[in-house]
Image (cartoon, one colour):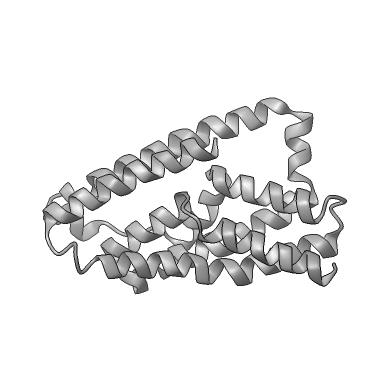
Length: 196
């Protein structure tokens, strides 16, 4: 991979990782509601899950969709349904009773990693990265793409989590937190509509 192509890949991974999408909106919400420390497993699950996704897409997952087009439609329906469910959970989270609020927790590492497979933006990013930078799906190019995304993605998603944590100071009462969570739920749904 030439230096020019590597720089283009770094730029692509930065722009696609830093822009709003389901992961970033959920991480900002988690940062606001639970803080940075409790959100770290979620954050790491996003990054590691996406690296694994890029690797698997690069070695041929897309061929399944070509051979069995209905699987892509099924994935889309499941993705939309799950994201709508998550948006609902975010919207109502500030209105939980104190007992329910005490038991509320951010996504785990595994949940966040698995979420990548129903995240339309993650699919778009992975497919575009492989298509643009490893069209022949050579393993060393796929590995470079995954490594670049790993290095670039962690600071990007961390920034969203830290932003959420910073916003927490404004969200010092249930009313403000509830409004914030409703806005984040709407943005989550919007991010899905934009990607689709």
